[in-house]
Length: 145
Image 1 (tube, rainbow, N blue to C red):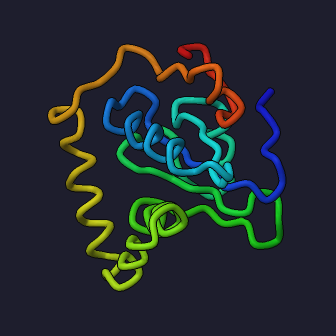
Image 2 (image 1 turned 90 degrees about the vertical axis):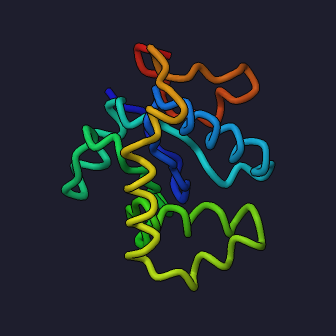
């Protein structure tokens, strides 16, 4: 049984064993006091369920996904460059510049980095375990957490 996503939530699905991805989650948490974003690991059943609904595979660990407006008529799933556009401008005004970078270029840059992130930053043996204060922002804490 998967966890219900609160209506209207924005859920960021990330690779739970990627050191860089874990740091990105920490950065978002540090700059998102309003709680605009919730998190789930791509390795979990919630990601498998949501991504399957949109014809995507949760086994694609080289992508980052954001489910925007969960459970609303405007719900949509975005990935890579569009995911960056969904996250960063809400946290940093200067990131509004992302809307002027062509999406294919953003996607290309993201995919190129994603293929090398384990070599550059490493990989955990298990998914990131959130601190007690962060637990409410994580929708599921799979078996590895």
